[in-house]
Image 1 (cartoon, rainbow, N blue to C red):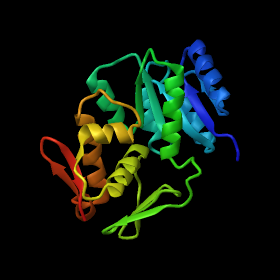
Image 2: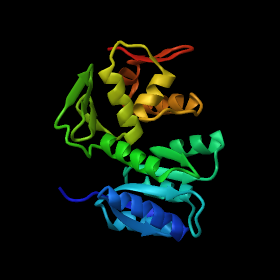
Image 3: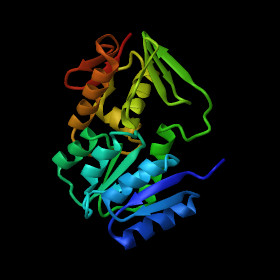
Image 4: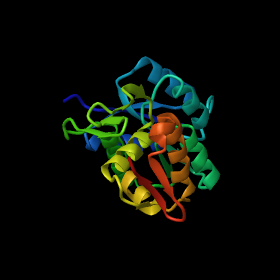
Length: 226
């Protein structure tokens, strides 16, 4: 199997080297960019890149603006790095289509673990084909595709993982904490509104009939019912 290629965009050369060294130990190839515009251009020129690690504060084009431009033509998974820890910044990142949000300073080992988790959710594993259906929804985990009434639906990595988790737990009441811990792969200490934001977007993309199968349990979380 070819090595997985990851783009690291950060204006600090020391940070890029640190992340690259840890990723290399796990067998990843790292492409470095020093600003957001360079990252956008690199992604446009190299479709073989499987994941982006993007800093927020960069010259020429900051991380948020870079994500906006990348999402115009690519759904490649994105992990956002930032020194900001305010809830509004986290929600802004997820609203733009970011798949993970990590605050600086962080443990490089934890970053690598997050990278591996996001790649698994994106289909970079050896689990084999696995198709799940519910009502008019079909999820092909191996191909990382979702169909509603046999029409493909374009979901972000996080939305895809949320939908898969719901389908694998049909009829079970799921707390927001359970969803966060399972879908994000780590204990998560952010606001529950992070889940609500993703569910709202997922429902909208699935359409009324399919989206209505995701039931809200007030004061607790959600339940998927056909």
